[in-house]
Length: 147
Image 1 (cartoon, rainbow, N blue to C red):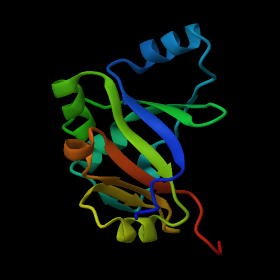
Image 2: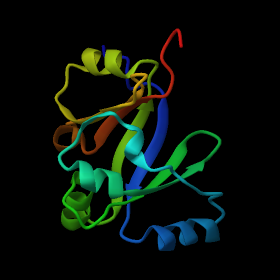
Image 3: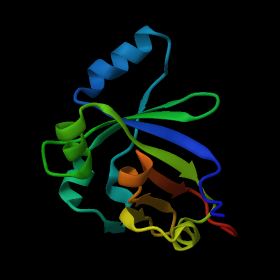
Image 4: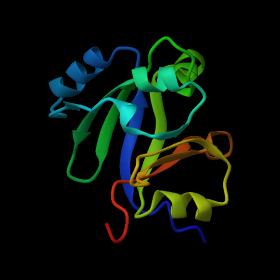
């Protein structure tokens, strides 16, 4: 049994207007929100359109049991933009925390949709699970064992 999808880290919503959506969530008591730094830190990037990837805006809200993310893609072609175009706003992916991004990807045995790694090999992997599982699953690591 695959053990990489055990620790939910975040739920990512793709939205048309990140400011409007953040304001709505704040109006119902969900916050505070912070802007996620630019995504340019990834030295190894396997995404359909790196320019579009780097233009996406993210905001995050750290709740007690998980992180809520808002993502507003640019008008450039990307999986997130395509999701908005075909499905409208909604859950783009569920993100799970793993200790080692490379080990999790290797252990998954699933096709990879997108991935990115920083110089210390931390990073993310999107798996091609939406068609069969209803949503894209992602693994992410921020710390590598021994570092």
